[in-house]
Length: 293
Image (cartoon, rainbow, N blue to C red):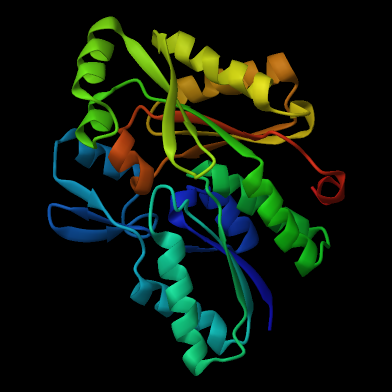
């Protein structure tokens, strides 16, 4: 019997973290030309973005109730307790499907204990939460404190996002035709956040890619707290150079303690395209959690 922290692949958590902690990550499905693939299991970012560049038909859907039942049953059979940090309900129906699956599993395993937290985060936003929780567990934090920290970290996680190419947001209905045409012509880049419901929301527009990147750095300074003591995440599709630029800016401007660079996978990349880049950080910290990090 164990207390297991798990997540899904929309967290875009790095392979190194998975390996270090033996983290169980449920793969998010993606359909390419009518064939199902599973993010991080049989399709990975480089291959995915190559396929996307070829203009092939790509669709995503959230992990189904049946899929969740298959995953959860493994833990129920082993009499393990589970903490699952899931993809935002503002973007996908993952949370509801997971709860329905948990109810079904308890029909056969009535003692199965699982806490499912709607992260209201995306990509490394909740990948970072999971990594922090795993580190707390490694450093001796008890189950109750870890669950409390999970809710706190999710509530206080900020996302500052931009994309260089607007066509994927337009194709997915997240950008109007007028904004798409004007933005493309004038080199306008949207600044996107996740709102209180965990939904993507464009809040600003800037002209030029370098200005967009610098705006992400500024937002970390404006909204973040004690950045020099934080572990901050940068997630990107294919533009590693811009990710490295952001990393150096965060370190030089705010003396950030640690920066994690991760790749955006299928769940988000299918809708944003390969040029997505984001900075994720906390807008508050709590000492009772920090001492385990």
